[in-house]
Amino acid sequence: MSDFLLETRDLTREFKGFVAVNQVNLRVRRGTIHALIGPNGAGKTTCFNLLTKFLAPTSGRILFDGQDITDEPPARIARRGVIRSFQISAVFPHLTVLENVRVALQRKLGTSFHFWKSERSLDRLNARALELLREVDLETYAALPAVELSYGRKRSLEIATTLAMDPKLMLLDEPTQGMGLEDVDRIRQLIKKVAAQRTVLMVEHNMSVVASIADTITVLQRGATLAEGPYDQVSKDPAVIEAYMGSASVELSGAH
Image (cartoon, rainbow, N blue to C red; front, side):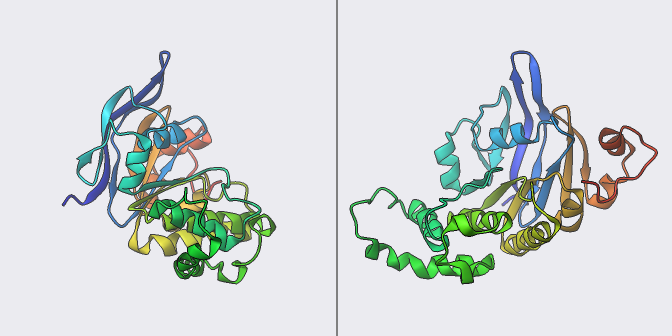
């Protein structure tokens, strides 16, 4: 078994002559948090879209758990355990917090279309749903409609629904975007906690979050890999500092 759960080889995506992702070779080690960072327009979200097959690559290969998944459709990749949490909070606002997790568990069990069954038949999912809510510190909010949660707690709920799909690889797209400092810290600690037995690939703009939890960082610029390594190494790289700050004379530290 390879040390790397996910690998891309010369992954490229062009849009009518514009190269959005340019020969990216990504290697995500099992059981680690790997962050994908870069200035706006660097190709981070396009890269995520390629990994989940929302977009097809122009060229290059994607390997997951040793298998070539380049030509597989999105549903098949999700069934393999590549689960993406979206940039915009995607919860059902008028269902309770518990019911939101239960819906995700139904999808995992393949019972999501059993709409003719009584709600009581879904009660067997409650114990697992509560377990997942406990994992993201939302157990006390189980009976609350999701619409009443704070923005940061909605993101926690979204992580719980992602966990319900039993991911081998969690793809987190800007998990702290739009949050105040208190929520950012809660989500940062939560990602660290849920990543203890899992592999996480995240796109994140908040450098202080990346610095505190990422094992490996890949920096993209104009669709290509600019640098890769642990934060201490990447943050001192003159090319990275210039990409972010426009000058190599300052050191990158905790910048947003």
